[in-house]
Image 1 (cartoon, helix red, strand yellow):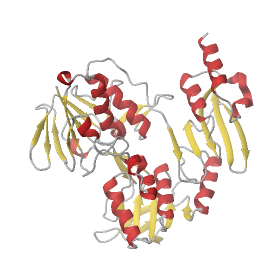
Image 2 (image 1 turned 45 degrees about the vertical axis):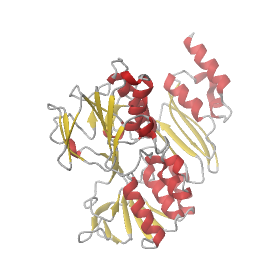
Image 3 (image 1 turned 90 degrees about the horizontal axis):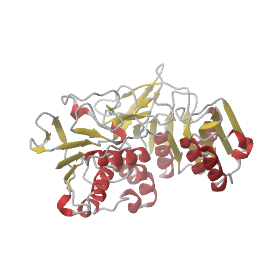
Image 4 (image 1 turned 120 degrees about the vertical axis):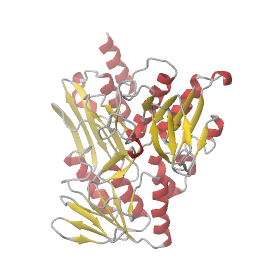
Length: 413
């Protein structure tokens, strides 16, 4: 069987790794070819900030730079796919050569995006790509870029802002919403994050609408509504992520914002599966379908894809909504819904513990300053355990494994 994987991020490489684990005998192994548009070994986008701050190549290349060689994968770096022809079971590359496949996996990931005119101009950087990120960081370290304007209130935008501030840039964030990270943070948690950003030198302007990146062939200004102009040496569009799917325009695949897949992560074309930031999957808690662009979801989906390719009837349980900030100076994690029927909360200064319950079950939580217990809360939430008996005891950082075990066993009984 010839398996072609387009994309070498966490989803793509995890598909290959799990395939090899399930087929340890060399004479039974599928032929795997992996294509990446970037000229690097498979890397982890969430580790880019650590890599640029501390030079930690081991974190960036978290599987090792020789992972494809060890997995006996034909890895083609710096190769762009021009078109997919499902009927002929082949992909056309940018150099007009073709690659045949029996099964195709789309794991092309996503890029940062802002629905603002001019977001695709040169000078507007995409920090989900190591190629683009290296370009910006190199200019910053050389002194060519001394100021940056970031459009967007999301987690990635915050991480980028913190990194650039540490590198000595004057950083301004433009947020249309009334707080940072509105998709994941309630107003109280966002206030803690906003103050921490300000202390680290990041200028945050909330409630401000960006109209367009402007420039003659290259972005050299950001125009705000109703007409104010902000200048910077570099710009980052970071209101969200946009799946890299343009090369699939003629393939006949069912797409919304991302590739639409079933619970086996198969597209509407049986020989094509997908995983990672490129796909729309259902939320594990709410059932709503959208692109869940985080590392753990990509890896979990990759395992399902690999097992499906080998004939197992594995089903995807659904994606999780969660994220954490690692460079804020204050530990912070947000998981699940911002609201519920009941809210448990304790706050002391910048230490906040907030748990949302519906029908006695955890549907989301926000922790800042002390994130102990996050794993326990997440496990209880995913198992849908009734925790109403614990009341405010749930807020204790030491609410740990012993209580979790009792809760799970009593629920099972």
